[in-house]
Structures are given as structure tokens and as C-alpha cells.
Length: 346
Image 1 (cartoon, helix red, strand yellow):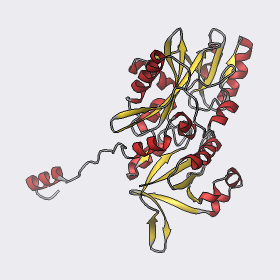
Image 2 (cartoon, one colour):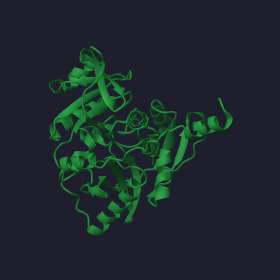
Image 3 (cartoon, rainbow, N blue to C red):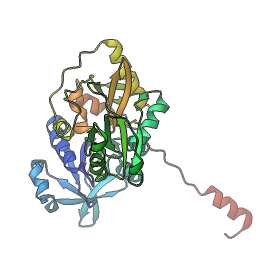
């Protein structure tokens, strides 16, 4: 089956998703179909030659063919109704809202569309940072202590400094601040509350070691990426992470000993095994005094973290051939027929 990238969406990370799609166009060796999801919830079929950032910035996509979901996949309007555009495995590349919050996963499952990406349950656990803390605890993976602050309770915040402030349901370091004193906290909360009505506070550990591991499960086995130690100064802010979304060059593996690398892989496997089948995900970890802590789960990482894999195309193809299938219930109306037979007309 051919593969299709679905990107865009109603999200603060809308433009990042476009960058990811343009980057993967250079990486994925199969012929791709490009499907843009506008902020209004419209699907548009984009020609490969139009996969340029300015095309979307100028909203020229509205001149393209509009697509609609029907049972089994996408279709476009024809003379005699909707006409399928082909048998496609869809790759969910919508970062943030719509893509990572479970809306698209639910939609694809409802219409029986085969897709690469997190399922609805996995989206719930990874999109909200509070639930991700619970996920780590369930999986036996350590996580940093935290506090959740809502707009209504911000006047009661008591914390030690330095602290990092993060919107509860947002990625790409958007709205994130490092706060070193109490006088800086109000401004940092104002920034974060521009994007969410609740935020997460965690201790900021200076010079902490950070490592990233990506992977996907195919044919019953997890294909692990290389272990990456991201280059950073302080913390990875939006501008530094934004550059990652356009990365296509394979990285050098981090120079870590095998014992630590195995700890990171084991922690990744524990998280992935709790519902992420069908997706390429990336887990970001802290290492403190030799102990591994989960920082966050990226259920749809920038450019699908292609740069972390030795053979990304082989990984993607294996995953596409190993997708989970939603259970379909066979309806035979046996119960109604039995009642009708026993009691007459119903």
C-alpha cells in the first residue's frame, strides 16, 4: 500500500507540522500522497510540487482538491459521488492538537483507515503531561516531582527555585520558561497561560544529562533508534527544537556506555508497551546520578525522528506492515430475533 502524510491541524504546532511534512518528503523513498488538514478541519490533496512553506502561508491550498473521509479511507468528489483516492496507509504527522490529542486517531479508527500514529488511548496518556507522570509511575519508570497550577489557583503557588514552567498540553517547548526566583514566576505563568489553562512545574536541574530514544514495534519486536544526547545550552527552547523538525541527516549515536544505553532502551520499551503500538514515538529522558527519569513522550515526534534511525525507511515499512487492527464487532441481531420469536411482534 502507498503511504500518505496527513499534516497541519488546529494546533499551536500547525506550522511545525508543515515543516515536518516537507522534511519527510525528502526522506521517505516511497511515492507519497500529501493531505493537508486546515485549522477549519478541512482535508486538502496537495500536489508534491506544492510542498513548500509559502504555499500554505499564502493559503493557496484552497485551490487544491478537497478530500473527505469515508469508510476505508479518503475520497474526493466525482461526477457520481465520492471517489476513493486509493488504498493508503496514513501517517499522522499532525503535531499537537488534533493529531496528538486523539481526535484524528478516533476518526481514523471510526472510518477504518489504516494509519501510523498513536491510538486514542496513547494520545490521552502522552498529550497531557500530568497523565504522562501517571504513565511513568504505572510502567515503573521514574519521573521528576511536579506541581500542577491552574489559572484559578496561581496565587497559592509555593515552590522551590529554579523551576521550569510548562503548559500542560503543549509540545515543542512553546510557552516554557525557566524561573530562577519568585519575582519571575508571575510573568512565566502569564506566558504559559496564553496557551493552556493549567501548567506543570518541575524542578529545573542545571547541566542535567538528557538523552532521546525513538522506536516502533514491528513483527512483535521494538526497533530502537540510536541514543541521542541533544546539544543544548540550558534547556531546549522552541527555536532549538524548531530546527529539529526539519532534520533529515542521520545523527551520531551518543557516547554512552552500554549499561546506560540498555537502561534507556528498557525504559522506552516499558512506556511503548503501554499502548503505543502502531506509532513511531520518541521518549526524552533525564539521567541524574545514574538513574533514568522520563521527561516526556513525543507520540508524533518532529519529522518522525527519522534522523535517529539507521534505516528509517525500513523501520517505517515494517511498521506499516504490522499495524494493529481495531476489533470489529459482528452484529447479527440474535438478541432481538430471540425476543421477537418468544414474544411475537416487537
